Picture (cartoon, rainbow, N blue to C red):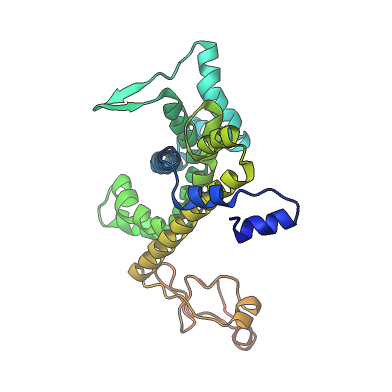
Length: 301
């Protein structure tokens, strides 16, 4: 007996195998779950490595050694300005064609890592590190320079001041864009299918070719990608709220009307009109206050 979804599609003159769709959505085969797991660990490993590498690149951009700064700038310029798909193919196929390096299967502690997975992780890491370096550099610049100077005045070395004072304060500026980049990373792992990584998109292509239920299986894959990004969105929001509580940042509750007429984005603003971002917060000034008593000098908002 045909389901109501199948009847609707049939009435519209379209073919939709609803039983195939629901069976793969609610009870996916083991090979589909394996592809899902590959997508997750590709994204997690690549993002962690990219964040660490991006931190070192961001610190290198702040050094006084000009050749190193130029080298890091060239790196970010190349990897941010070329398509990820091209980088992936050049890493796996191009290096082997030139005879420079061929990714072979690697066994670590009894765990076999295929060469295509290694190439995908390397490419995703190098590409994402270029973006993370800019995110971390902007976050470090957002920390009050007085924090670094105060740490030096206590006897800390520049390295200790950066590691113990500046970087921990920059974390709260890094988390939101980092979460967005990881969201994109989970979707970009589908590009690894071009070099033969059996992640979720490649498995979906193989199922589509063997069953000819193209729309159904791609709809299942889309819903699984949506589920992954939705779960991560919830986790990211929880992390942001935890960091805000740690730094004493209170989200101001606003009505729908005032949210569009007021300042866009209320994160980091206190309930009593005090900017709680960083130290030395100052009261906010309304337009009436400025006209009645204009500030003499610059005032931190």
